[in-house]
Length: 176
Image (tube, rainbow, N blue to C red; front, side):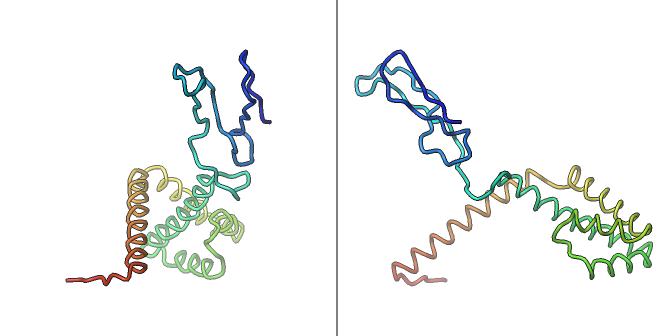
């Protein structure tokens, strides 16, 4: 709910919309007295993050986490398949057959369906869940992910801007 700032001095009301679900039109956390003559108040922004519309109740980070969960399930299936191929070819074939009938796009749905297929498949599903958790917690390089994401965004932006400038300025790109 928007709140109105009131002070002892006559100041126009300022809305605090940072906590609301709508995009902030005005975002001021404090109006503090200033010593300069040009303005009697300093304005400090309340929200440091960009508003991302269209995500409903979930944040972009929550959506990314869901995608990572599905990716970790995919990786766990690949790891379990590689293990089964060498020491249990029969279970390997059963899991491959199950994969051919069920999508891996939703990792939780895939594992739930695998658990309900048969007692033997339930064991495979539990193994996939164990591997998924272990990989996420111990093997995935989270710092490397952040570094690579920053690098890829910067490189992609630079390339796209360079290509656009070359295209719109009609300058030939000379490659040696």
